[in-house]
Image (cartoon, rainbow, N blue to C red; front, top):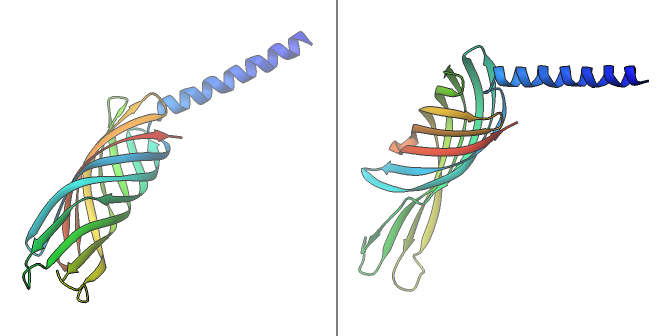
Length: 194
């Protein structure tokens, strides 16, 4: 009986060691969830505004040797907003505000050293912005309209694996949408790899 228990323990130890070896050989493989924050600089019709960006990403990466392929999805929001007073009549106010931004795309990267990944990314983006107008009087002329714009996003980044499950990243990305709307963003993130 003791011999049987010892054999089971040795088998379990061997399997655990093999799994640990495999995960240490591929620190960038698996599903990820990441919280991001940064700077959002939006531009539309010659008007620029900068605000705070916040959101989250979900992704999955495959590592083959030093090369990493991944897919990711993201939703974020931004505080970028610009208002003008006395636009049409005295006392009125018009504002444009960046809203939520959706992204689905892929990335490809190269592992440098053992725990640092340099990557490029590209994919589809969809931004919502809101325009509001207050007539400054009775409110009968007030309006609010949200507009969704399709576009593309490209970016570059660096990611650092901290242990097996924790990651930190920084990236720059540029998004170009319909109607001359664009966004430059610099973000940092902290996440967990499963």
